[in-house]
Length: 423
Image (cartoon, rainbow, N blue to C red; front, side, top):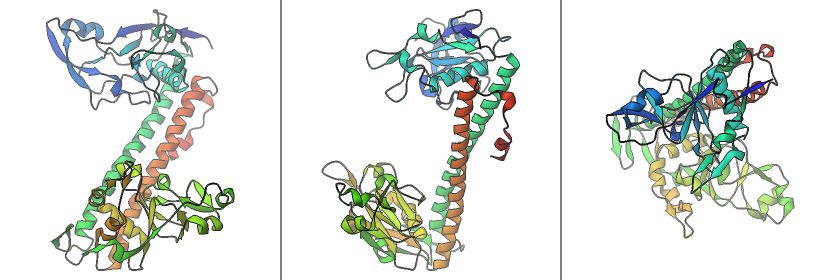
């Protein structure tokens, strides 16, 4: 398929980003910067800055619908310079771009659809095509602009371009919608958990305790009164036979909320006896040492017997309350527990055993109410898991379509996307 280079001025125009000016008259306007690139080919207008702009630049530098914003300076070791974003105005206001970007404008729209061009250039970026064009200066990576303009955009029939752009953009819209649902459900769970552990499910009056409000029939109880606390360990790495089994061995990097289905490493029964400990299904694993504590409180319920290392403590229920409730109760008060963290001599974040043992959680007098609370939270966890899975599937579909359709490997007329509706 013949292509048209980006340097062809009969097809593509260029608009430079704004440099700071001071020639009056000035007017405040919205300026899009590199921080507004979402990384999936569109712009995030959540933190657009407002800067004084020389009035004379309003007409010649203002963004138009369909413009393609290209990052010319920026990037980093894990993010090559050259990101692309399609400008779709979020409102009636006027927008500009900063001096670290350049706008590519499709001037011959009888030959090219701007949405198609934006997606094609985004596909080039994802393929790593811009990495070889990076030129590093003092801490900043610049795009070799003349080489970039040598890239050619395949000239498919316009109707096919529009169909491809519409299809791929719809997949992107849907996976971003799932990401929003995932985030919202997480927030809903946090709010629900806060309500459940302060008000319960029985409509009781509340009382003030040393750990906060809770229903009148509830009581604060220490973790140690509710469960046994086991320590784990690591079998010698030098004994290869210990690491050839099928017993999951959990370290800090494996702990994820809300459940732990498996672990990266596995050991043999001999490995457990040599340096670790096997904890029964339904127990709670809590990270007590590691940088994972810097952002959250990794705590999970295990669905099968597992071994674990010395950075993790296992909480084995004494019988009155399930592991699911213990995890929820601890996580509901995580801010209080995280406040007990102290850095070790090497700077590692650490929870002392005594702080874990004495940590108090809100407990209902009725185990039945505790189980009902777990059921409510489990239902929300399932929704979170579903949205996360759907987001992952749709994002992979977006990337696959972007690559395959833009390289001509699949024709839009050959696609069966009935599964998309099901998702």
